[in-house]
Length: 168
Image (cartoon, rainbow, N blue to C red; front, side, top):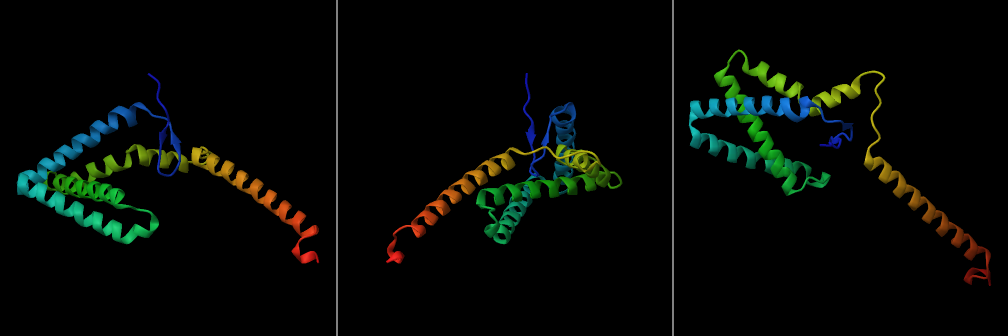
């Protein structure tokens, strides 16, 4: 089975590892389940669902209203709201069930996530960021634009040196 590099939001290509593909998802899923059960035991399943939906809608509307001009559309704002609502409820449940260790467990899950470990690895001295596919595409597109601009300028120079309307 062959794996392709995982694309990260900061355009760093990170090779999949046993940690990012198997171990961390199990850790994060277990922590999420424990946190949601903690909230459900404290407030009930109906209240958990109601708070989840209301908080997701509130965060999504806020994200969309604040960042609509920056390219965050309704679908992305909805994902942001859902993720933020889930993370908030999981953290609340972990703290309710494990008052001493809930914060520590949440910190371990966050710090060891594939996104965080990829970012930390790129901050080490001597490590250079991999060239992203987007930067190559942008460079090729810029080269095509520059060549087209040079052709336009050359044609304009030919027109102004010839017998144009201005020449008479």
